[in-house]
Length: 371
Image 1 (spheres, rainbow, N blue to C red):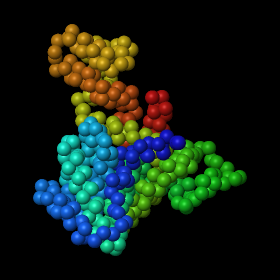
Image 2: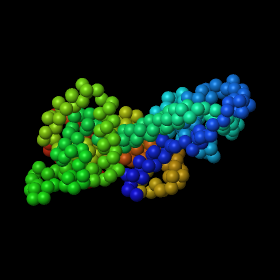
Image 3: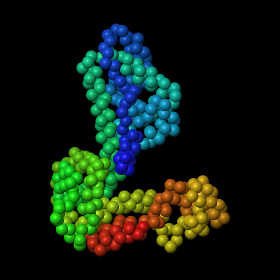
Image 4: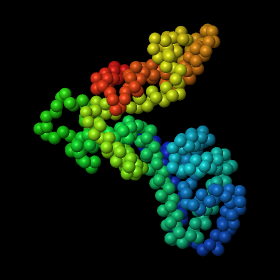
């Protein structure tokens, strides 16, 4: 399986699931024969009215909403909850309610009883009612899958979105082919001479993307979503900007190749502006008198090594700042990335999309090759 396909599938596994615990019985049973189940459900409804209401609304089960199994541990449930809080079609209060219902063994057992009672009494529903319930339930799951797909593209293909919303030609327009073009149509026509001076690699980069089935699926998905979500006025404005991209192939390629780095740089600078003074001749490693080559690879050993160095120094604000960054593996990873990429990413950050020198872009692209 291609790396891109696996990454997408792994994301969807956590954010959009089927609902194995929700199954409306095909069999019909007279309501009078189910009276005791109705009565039991009514009693549960007194204490858990929203649980029952969610089931009557044909929403997926709470297990499905959080993408967890009935045997999920407290830690697995917590992780699922944190993920879904960030990326879900379902309202926040619904995700909160699902987590609360499954968060303790007693509540989870109670929820299972409510769910089982509900599925039993659906036997009293007519065929039409059952069909409507199933359609409504399946529609919610499909909407969540669509939302999860879009969230994946937003999180992982930021450069594509940036180019689109700045009016750049689509990949298909750059190649001069239709959006339904087969792979053979993406290749240069036989006998076509390539102008080496004008061929900066943009078309080849785009061909590589579109020849990858998963990446093409994601790109087409992005185009479909932005088309649906953008009103006609916005789409017309973007169309007018197309002409401004003539002659900017190298800049287009720079964003396509390195926008993720630009985004990460921006995030780090927003959250850690004070790091900016420690990316040149003086680094946090210098402040703590650390030789990076001597820091152990093992996380715990590295933390102990850095702590020992810190204890030998006077606790100045600068020393405290350096230690607060390097003792935290996540912050340390961001800082190390910044040290490695700051020179060219900061220059990229300074570029004006409407007014830049082509030689600047070329220098930045060549700089990234040396990183």
